[in-house]
Length: 259
Image (tube, rainbow, N blue to C red):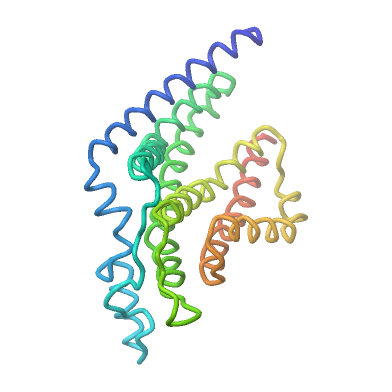
């Protein structure tokens, strides 16, 4: 195929991926109560699953650091179209999350014609693994990082004279950006796999630049999480584990390429 033919193929893959995202967005938009009352505002409630489990754990060690009756802040909307635009924006992010497995499938469909038969069969397993990793990252971000960030930042005060009136967009951007970013960070082994297949990444390279990678991972964790050291560490640790998994994957790919 010529370069223009490849571009035409890519265009249709992008079109189908966009349609899938739009379908997910419409589904999320029509389920406003589930999207906001249950999911987005769930981490604001003291009865949220994470707070309940952490409260039980803290009580078991003789502390009540994660036990509270209410969040001491109020969400505030200051723009005329603020709630409507927020509804659209959050629905779009939900659509991306819902359609992500299909987006991976379209990426595979674009790449697979250039693979040998054995590589194409192996990449199907990687496709499933990539979807699972993404949703594990989303769940990790939503149930661990988001509630800890909200609990810390929402209850932190410098004085009793100051009341927290948190802007709606600020609260929602914390929930959505952290959740989506964690899902994408957990795709690191998949990026390593395709990078190793293309010869762009080697296991020795990843070992050599391990220290540099740790710094980059810590910086990314600091960017996607609020200024809370605990949240940054919680994001950094699993990504470091995935980096080591990536080294193992790169080794396997190198052995396969050598055959």
